[in-house]
Length: 168
Image (cartoon, rainbow, N blue to C red):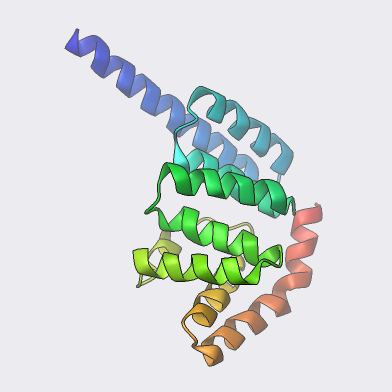
């Protein structure tokens, strides 16, 4: 019986990783709708995986569907309350949606979980310049205004490029 359970766990993990890999590849190719559809299929098979739900939330944000992005990020935070990717992702989506107070509260919560911002090293943003958006609001939450302005200016300077990437 132990071998059967081990095989099932290995097969399940492989299927999750393959699904995540395929959706990530589609996202990197800017085939967002296909990536989203793939993630939705993956989530139907495993609706308790915060990484799958968080990646879907990020895709919704990329497609500028902020209400759905926020809903999915909240789901990811509920699945993994200490996951900095989910917390900072929710904060970012809330900020984009103009929900400033709640966004700053989430950024502060993220800093409680990951004060060194180590999650940024493993974060996958579409496009990569989104890191500046995250950092700008993180520094704002810390009342480090000079750093916040610096990163916000970098993000704004790249915003036309970001919009073009999202429309392709």
